[in-house]
Image (cartoon, rainbow, N blue to C red; front, side, top):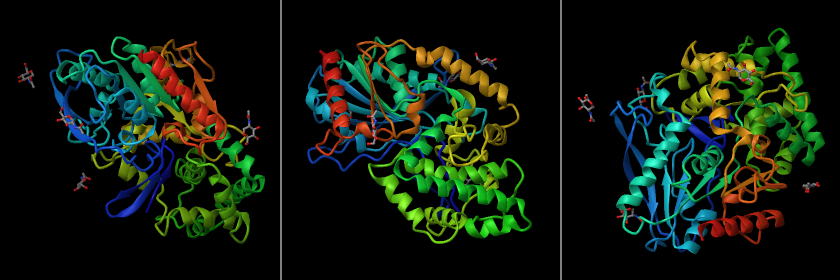
Length: 469
Ligand SMILES: *[C@@H]1O[C@H](CO)[C@@H](O)[C@H](O)[C@H]1NC(C)=O
Ligand SMILES: *[C@@H]1O[C@H](CO)[C@@H](O)[C@H](O)[C@H]1NC(C)=O
Ligand SMILES: *[C@@H]1O[C@H](CO)[C@@H](O)[C@H](O)[C@H]1NC(C)=O
Ligand SMILES: *[C@@H]1O[C@H](CO)[C@@H](O)[C@H](O)[C@H]1NC(C)=O
Ligand SMILES: *[C@@H]1O[C@H](CO)[C@@H](O)[C@H](O)[C@H]1NC(C)=O
């Protein structure tokens, strides 16, 4: 059994027990192969306070990080790749834009793990009352304490300037780090940052729609009519049984809400994850696979979806709740990220817009239900909206004021719709690269880059170099 959900930002297959159960978008795109000259980073642990905003609370926990000193010369800059809602790994300390900049500037590299993700858990479990310590404010303060400590204790770092680099959610963090801790951070590179929290992120599926259409109008139409046929089927007697067979769901399909929305959302997310991480040409390749299927649009769509599960059955809402409703720490990423969306961000990818192929099948109410069902009745619409308003008030949303930050987005990335649209000022440029996907600018500059991407990467390095002078 597997689940497909675009909760946030990258695509990974998660397994429950032994089987491959969940296919979800999270984290960041995998780095390319390490550069030949790259040494392996090491892991370290750093003692953090649990609550940076209550000095009477003396509880602590261990945050994990990676370090890589191969280029470092005393007094040179420190480059920190900020962890987001994923487990840290060596990739971006061995290749990519940050690695190249560290080489150019003889910099030290760190990768900090975000609290409650990877192996950086303050508690033995993730019961809802413990998740109140999972906030972006706390995570930013973790990084501030980390920097302060390293500069004080590591040889040659006392006078080092600090550059933070972030991807997706951690790209928002990179901007906010520079904004809130300018005395600690000299510059930031922000790749694909959502910056304005929003409850109903209806533009997400509009971007999915437009990018599929750009590649194949027929493909978009097949998705649309296949989805409509599934809706019709669920109206018919025994229709749910037929659809269970067509989609190979693990359990019988329940047609009441939110089970029905969850099922359609799972189908939507197959295409969302395709577009969000599409390499150039990939959408066309996948559309051709869908169109090569035989039968009606219903059969074509079902068969294509089944393929994504490689023989495993499709998990539905009950299984989803069983798994992510448990405080067990093995539920890495999804429970925690949902908590952050229910309390701070929303970003719910709905079918509210008409400009997408999934009818009205997964409205905002799906996510209202998920928040309550995962974390309890208290996590209602009012709490959600208060949390979203708070996020934009304390971080500024689109109206934030900051300098020495380069922001890069791609038009294929559905997250660009909640990102910065234009330069904030001459020292906060924004590049929106036509035809590229989520976080695609983090890889090393290459002659294979689209010209616009090549230029954005080159200019990024120039800006950071200027601010480091
Ligand atoms: C925290 O404070 C309590 C009460 O003063 C004390 O008993 C405990 O030892 C302290 N714990 C740590 C880790 O300092
Ligand atoms: C990581 O930091 C430790 C402590 O300073 C150091 O001994 C080690 O060499 C560093 N590892 C790398 C790969 O730079
Ligand atoms: C939590 O996960 C561990 C490791 O998979 C497992 O042994 C344990 O039974 C789980 N506990 C609960 C309450 O699900
Ligand atoms: C959130 O902000 C919106 C827009 O300013 C406002 O209409 C709404 O009442 C606020 N909601 C809460 C719960 O604070
Ligand atoms: C972006 O790229 C697409 C496909 O190559 C092209 O059709 C479109 O005109 C480009 N848009 C801009 C604003 O350059």
